[in-house]
Image (tube, rainbow, N blue to C red; front, top):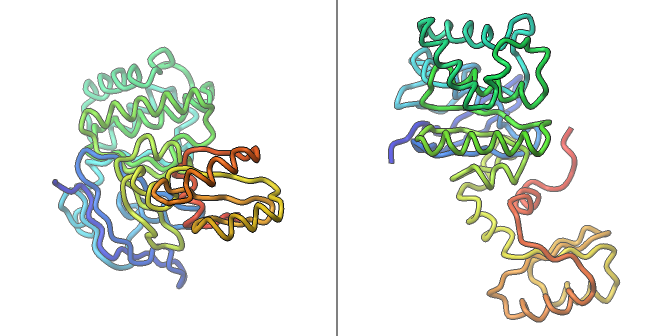
Length: 303
């Protein structure tokens, strides 16, 4: 399948510190590809190199089959970017923000107005066309930034934590719109701290830490490989329970105040331990991408 992005041994160094340390991956046309990782993992540094905002230190990076070092103008004309921070012009209306931004891509006035109306309706913002930006809620602002990223009708949409700070209703509305865009064939590159968002939207993803890729794959496959099928959590485990788990379960984490057991239905003790611990009143749930993320990147806070 045709690649939209091909990164090989991609590197970025700031003052001798390697923010991105030899990263290689491909994004295929028409898929949603996720980049996950804790704070400081190198996610934003990676995507800034992809859309030409930050020059790479080493490696190679082709976007649409073009070298980002020599063809960045052509590449940027075919990319839409929704950044983390709100950088809309607060002195302009919604329509004025979109029209001014469209002119950066040399979009004709008539086409710019048509696209603005169309994408505002698509993102349920058509009733706020003449509103000042400062009058919009947080959810509206994020949706407007996505509209702005679509105004040049890109072949690749880059979303850097697009739903951070949104309420559940706003998040789900954004997800539905992104799923529709992907169904139309738009390629999407997504960074997010929400594991449920990545599981729902991403066809494939990578998890980064300390500038390197830890794993790559389909979310469901990564969950099966690194967290099993079910999770049992035991808060404040008794000594006898801790000893039982230590002797019978090959895959668990002892966090002191809590035991986290990763169950694989192929294990002989699967049914026995599940039934016994359920009787103890423990929490049993399906394994998720968040379990994979925490196992691979750790549970310590990253400030």
